[in-house]
Length: 390
Length: 130
Image (cartoon, rainbow over all chains, first blue to last red; front, top):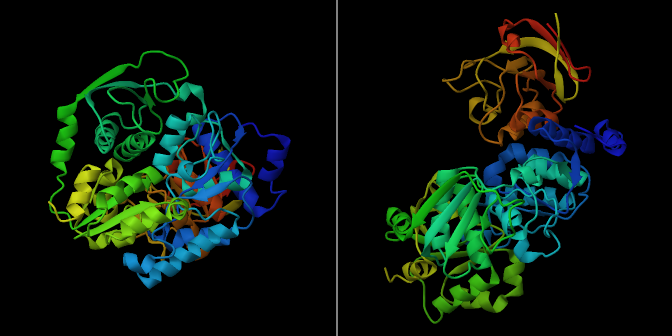
């Protein structure tokens, strides 16, 4: 891989041991994936935050690093609400390790915003055409597909390397040649809300790491619905880029994908039937993290009522802070608005036996990552279940 | 015998070879507190990787494996050096963050080296001496 004179100096250790190793990571990955050179990144989102996932080994590594990030960098969700972890049922030992992890990241100059939806809280992180080094699979999908920026799905160390060096290796989704649709997906159904999660759950399983080009009918999908679609495909498969005709930015050229899938209402309904809403002992919303619009809808549905089951509403701390009235309205029902974390990455989820969610992503991950059964319902079904109406 | 290779993680080290034809998942196959291969299904089951020159096809499994390599290194239980036929991100990143010399792009002939043979890996000069 080509390195500029300045990059070569970093690689040879002229700017210290931490930067040398970080550059070595970028070069090693560039060599593995055939990158020609490095490219500057606008922002970085770093995975490997929940202590449940990185363990003592990861914490030790992050704590040993020295230096400051070169570009705006934020974090993936942690294993708990950093303020209200006790209410979640997180143990004191875990909380201590989680706080140490957060402090280690803070020490490197990283903003302590723990969210899978960086684009919902900051406008300065990604614009069309920007190169990024983001980690969380749904954020990667949203950045590539809805914003029209360019990022691979980075692992924890490679994202940190990009943050400290300010660059990433130029390969994969950074290049036009890898951004062509591989499958056309024709959907003959009017979709709404959680239907997008169900659709993504199906399509991700079928096309794995392909690039789908959707032709939808009916109402134009809202940003939250695109968020849900991409998140589900990135979890049930590893889709990092998709297109929706007349909605998202366009593919680099308009060549016809080799394969076409046809899906209709029956197949969407089968996903709900396979993961029924009944018999859940808890309900969790906000995977990916709720937007202000979603908090508003939840507050409206809960108004004047009391929940009978635990209801978690997960969001970014900045969204909650900007909407204190909505948070208060939701919590009046007995539901809890948790920040910095979610049902997928927190160990607190493990005490439930079956969780109901409106997310196609949580549906994929809850059984494997938390050992918890999962049901899929619309937002209204989820609220009804929490209120004890079903 | 001297063999050409490609540097992934810099450094120079030598030790007795530990050779396997099976890929290794550092998370799951190796115990981070002892350096022993603990997966009964793995060809190296019961062997200790500490101080060895690990010769293997490459890594597999969870990306947390990179951190496990780091933890092994801090406890003094990591391999002295590693030779992979083809490196992938988990082992590459693990070796780099841990400061363990790692080279790749060698012929599969290297897997014929008998375990216990002293092997020197000079990643900086991109040379292996058996």
